[in-house]
Structure formats: structure tokens, C-alpha cells
Image (cartoon, rainbow, N blue to C red; front, side, top):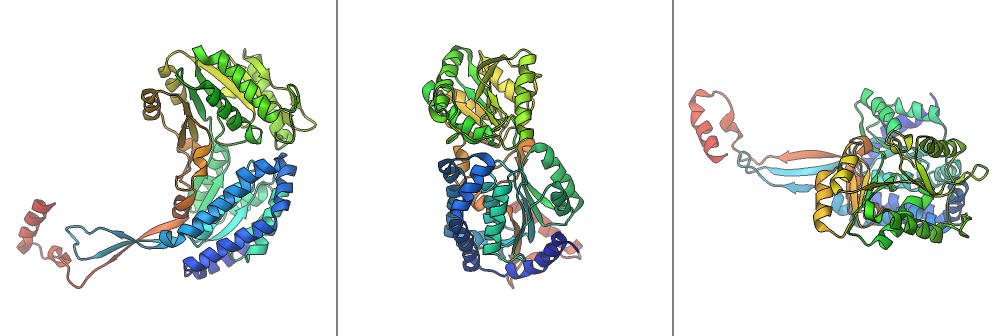
Length: 465
């Protein structure tokens, strides 16, 4: 038996020990995780810079502090989450005690992506630990430095019978997906999400899929364009655009198009450039791999070949795997840039005259992971929200909906299924078990056979129900 199989069998046995743990014991597990992270902070920053050229400040905000916040929130609320929830009585069963118990699902698999390689391992792991599960973790092979430090942290904090980490390529993922886990949490592309769900179906394993898609941004005619452009530039270009909820493309009223593009260029330059022409590598990340760099370069070339116009940027440096921010207009609908999730610093901008045009454009595509609305018109904001569907929505901001652990985060259909963060993550890794405790006095015997003498029971039930 190889290591994957051995650890799986060990965790299958150990899950029954964890099932007995109380809130204090699970809180201690979370504190051990936090302590191990704190002891390795410098190594984490170094790894994130090596893999993605993330600055220490950006890594702090989007990776470490995010994780610390999740741990602290879970520790503060875990007793409440674990407490059985009282449920009201019914007329047909008036004396029973009804409760929902949150019990661990068992042995879970977390498969993480490379774009936020630390946060997107630790965030679901925190929820899985809080819910009392054993976990096998598969970090991305495309961010090897971060994967290595994650492995060290988990070995420092846990025995493998509780939490185990498996580095490696697709062969390791394939081995893991063959096992009959009790739950799988996957973050990544829609295409691989389908592979994960297919594998899970063979074992009737429940799944949480955090995918992606083409998250649109609508910029209304009535808007503070300075604020909108600055927020969009930040949300699009943080992590060099490699963010699953980044604004993928902008739909903007025709009257504000030229002004927006000028402001976007201004704010992008202020935030991410050393000079007007030179990117600042201390604040602007690199593309994760040569393969992804080539893909993004080809998206720009293909769009231009089909008639798109590049209004600004788009310079590439294959040696440093850097793609400069780019703005494109007049992009044909059939261009790959408008069909695939971009996942890079390229922003298509599409003009509309009537809001209905923008709504129709969004609804022709699959449901996105995020939808952003910039408008000062409450009527238009309400109309967009009611007329579209998305995993989450921000009004007059971007990305920030992911930062509140009191809110569920997740996609819809092609952009994912299931929710994470805070109680929603805890619930995701738990089975909601119904427990009904009957009192000595009950009415159930009234519906037992023989029936002929009990026709009055049906008349009574019909009257009161």
C-alpha cells in the first residue's frame, strides 16, 4: 500500500476519535495551526514571492491576515456553532424534542489552486478542523515553494492521522480522487471541477466546488467614475489579475467610456508602475508559469487578429513572466478573450447604451462567481440584481465580499456549488443530523392500524392542518 492509501486508511480509523472531540479540543487544534503559521511567517512570505512575486504587504493582506482572521473567528464562535440547534414542534408531534446536531463528515480532501496558494489551503482547512474532520490536503504543484512550507506547517502542527499533506502533480491528485472520501473541497477551474465532480460521483461523495468564470462589472452612467475606476484597477490587477473573483470584463455606458479608460490607466499606473512606462516588480506580481504566460499572450494576439483594439498596455516580458496591464475595446464576442475566464491583467471594455443591453450580455453567459455594479441609481442597482444571477455581488466595490466571515462565499452552477467561510464553512464540512427525542406521552399511536375505527383521526387532522 502506498502512502496515499495508508494515510487514508489511518484517517478512516481516526475519524471516530475526532468525532468525540468537544469545542475546547478543536479550538486547541486551531490554535496549534495558528502558532505553526506564525512561526513560519518569513518562510511563507519568501515562498509566495518566489512563486508569484507577491510583495510582503500584498501577501499579508490577501493570504496571512485573511487566514488569521478566519482562525480567530472560528475560535470565537465554535462553541455556538457546535451547539445542537433547537427546532420547533409540530401539531402532529407536539411533545417531542427536535434538534439538529452538526457532526463531522469524516475524512475530507482539500484540493487547492496556485493563485492564492496559502490562503486557499488554509481557509477550507480551518473549517474542516472546526467541524472535527480528518483531512488530506493537496496543494498546487504550480506553486511549489508555498506547497513545501504548507507541508512543513502541517507536519509541525498535526499527526498524519489527523491532517496530512501530499505534494505532487496530477498523478497524486488522480490517486487521491480514486478514494472514497466523505467530502471533497476543490478550488480551481470549471474544467477541472467537472473532473473532480465526476470522480466524486463514483463514490457518492459530496463536493464543494469553488470555481470561477467571467465575472462582469457594470459601470452605470450615473456613477462616481473616479472611485469606480480606482477600485476596478485594484481588483483587476492585484496578484497580476490571477484572482477568481477579479473583474473579468467591464460593461460601461457609452457616455463614460473614454473617461473611464483614462482614469483606469491613471490609477493602474499610480498603483503598479515605477515610472509611466515601467512596471514596479515590488508591487506587481508575475504570471505563475510559462504555460499561463503564453496563454494570456495568445489571448491578446487572437483578439487583435479578430478586430479588437488595444487601447493601452499589453507589453510582455517572457523572461520575468510579466504581462503589463492591458485594456482592449471592440473585442469580438467570438474571441477567446470573451469566452474564457481571463485570469490575468487583461481588461476588455464593452460599451452599452441601455442597461438592458448589459444585462442581456451577462445573461447569455454562464453564471459568474462574482458580479460588480457601480451606480448611484438604486433603481438600476435593484434592476441588475433582480435580473441576473451570480455567486456573490458587490455594489460600488470589488472583491470585498470575500472578506467578511459572516457571509457565505461560493458560486452558482458553472462557477461552483456550496459555501465557505465562517459558519458556512463549518456547516459545509458537517452533516446536519436530525435528532427527535420522543416523550412518554405522544399521539403517534393514533395513526397505527387497525384503521376502520379511526376515521375520526383523519377528520381531526384535516381540520387542524
